[in-house]
Image (cartoon, rainbow, N blue to C red):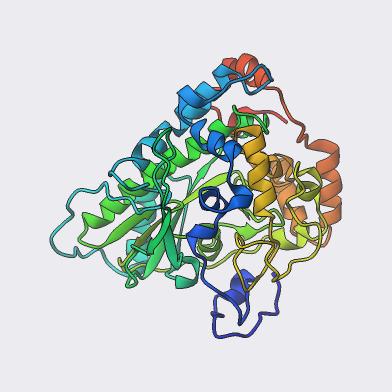
Length: 415
C-alpha cells in the first residue's frame, strides 16, 4: 500500500490502511455526473446508441444479430439474468430503486431494539445471516460520508415513450446518522466471463445484480426485525468500491476495480447501511497495487483504451471521475461509448486480469502468494505461461459448459 497520504481536511485515519490519497480539493460525487446518468442529459454521451443500449435490456428492443454471442439466445439469457433487478427497480412508481433510489420494499420491523450482545457478537450474527441469505463475501466498514453521493439523480426507467425529459438531482435519501456499512459481495460466473465481450457474458453481471438485490433487501429486513434502521442499496447511494476496500474485502486495481483474494474482480458489491452497533473490519493488503504497477494486461487489452497505463494521478479525466483522489482512473466516456457500440456491457478487463482465477486449487493459491511478494514479475510470467485468458465463443458455453456444469460457477471450469 502507498505509505504517503496527502494531508487534507478530507483525509481520515483509515486512509493509511487502505492507501487512499484524498487531497484538499476532494469533492463528494453527484450521481448526475456518472456516465449512465450523463447519457440522459449530457450531449457527448447522449444519442440513439445510448438509448438503444438501455432499451436492449427489455427483450422487445434487444436487437439480436447474427454475430457470435449476440444472437437471440444470448440476449434472452442476459435479460433473464437481469430480470429480478429490473423488476425491483420498478417497484415504486416514479423511482428507480437500486440504481437511483434506495429500496423501499420492506415490511415493518420490530418496535424496539433487540439486545444481540456485544458489537463483536452482533457482527458475527450479521455475517452469518448475510452468508445464509446469499452473500459470498461480507465485511463491515464504519460509515464514511465521503463515499456517499452528495446528491442522487432521478430519472425514469428508459422505456419507449417514457424517457425522462427533465432529469434532476434530488437530495440524498440515506439518513446521516448511520454508523456502519455492511458490504456484500457475490461471485460472477467465470465461465460466462470467458465469453466477454458478448451479450451472453452480460448475464454474469445480471446474475450478480439480481442476487445482490435479493440478499441486501433480505439482510436489511433482518436488521429491521431487530429494531434497528437498515437501508439496502446497490448503485443508488454511492460507489461500492471504497467501502469494499475499507471493509477488508478487496484492494484497488489499475482497472479501477476492487480485487478480492477469493474471486479477483469477478464480484458484484452491494451494501446495507445501518445504525446497528457493529465492529468494523480492517482493510487487507495482499499485493494488488504493487502487482498492478508492473502489470498492464487490462490497459493493453481494453478495446477503447479507457484504462490508464501510467501511474496513479489526482487529475480527473472527465466530470464522471471523483475529484481530489489520487488513483488509477478510467476514462468513463470511452468505456460507456464502447458499451453502447456493442449494445451490451464489457468486462474485458476482468477476463484478462491475472487475478481472474478460481483459487480452489494449490497452484492458484500459490500464485496468489507469489503475486504479493517481490517476485511479482515471476507471477506475471507464470500467468502468461499457464493461465489462459483468451476469449471463448458463446457456442462453447452453450454446447459444452451446460452439459458439464451443475451451476455456472468458477468451480466447474478448467483453465
